[in-house]
Length: 219
Length: 320
Image (tube, rainbow over all chains, first blue to last red; front, side, top):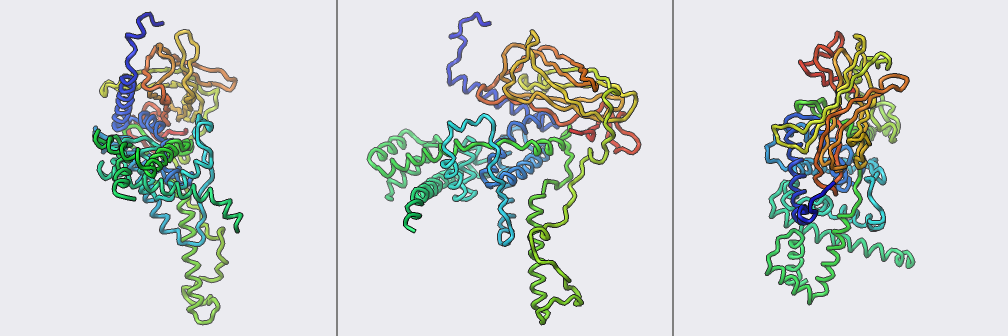
């Protein structure tokens, strides 16, 4: 189809990446503007963009698929209701994760009120259905994933949310700060503490795991 | 850990956020080169954070999608009652809490009546309370919030009563927001039901085809939606929208197809050519479908016994 000089028209890799990012941002901005104006189709498109990532984030924060689904639903309903009151320069992604984070924090408070009951049951509904296309050959072993997930739970939601936003969902530092409702400098400090706590928890778990057979042998 | 090591760990963290100066980077590398503990920490940090990045993502629950989008109406209005959300999980736990409080109350009253026996005649006592267990702790099911569909759904049209004409329109977003790559696709099913008020739930298949009519790959995105609406004398509509469409780059047309009768006869409609833009081949294309269909006017849908609607608002006719 192309009869021109491919090299002349081929932009540099870095330029292409920047160009793509700009265009994706423009598209999302347009969709957000349309959704803010009440366009239900645009909101549906935004929902489809973020439903999986938001559910993933909430699942990693709560450890429960059922709770993650409930909180994702709550997040999007709140977002739709509040979108019309937001400003044109809204960073939709960070704003949506902030709503999700607040929902998770509220959920945790409710949980803490109920955890004293001897009758409470674990609401962990088991292994969730992972996104199609995820290639298990490229992932760490299940045991490794479990170590990472357990270490994240050990360090608490304040630190885990920062690490998940920055390293799992790849938000920028500024977006992470906005999602956590803190300023950028505070976000950097929190990320530093979270990384340190995570490595400590991860190494402790790794050590425990490796020692378990020996302990069992001794006992 | 000495001060130099503590400072190095701070710098390692800041390096991940791209905030190191050239001098700080040099200072970091110089220390790492001579300190095995900090080298090990750097290795652990890289491996641990890579593990977080590689954690599998879960996919969204389709039931949640339906529940959320069923409440989204044009114009920014929502159909969810204020304060509504699915509290079923929490209510189960809350029921457990209430039952546990009740159990404690029973025990306390049993103790304080001085006999050690429950007193059924004493005012305020709870007689013959069965022993606590999970089943009795679960409260009566709280009715879910009924949807408009539950209340107002008219009978489903017999397929032979309905005739369709499909119009497929693809147009590049709203010029007011200058977004040529945000494409909306409207599929309008104009139908005739002989004046009957009935409801249709007919699958609409949206196909993307090249100029020769050959279907194009849409990268695993759903291309089948359900158009469903109360069919008065007006029409019904479903809409799709996509972002970042990364199929073939040549212009293409859209074809919609709807099953129109019990003998599998179909009606199709075709759009003019469109050329959406691929913004990032590494990201999935997003083809979203509006979860609503609407009649063309209030007069079409507002019948005796049904809920009144605002002019040009048939948002209650949703059965997806």
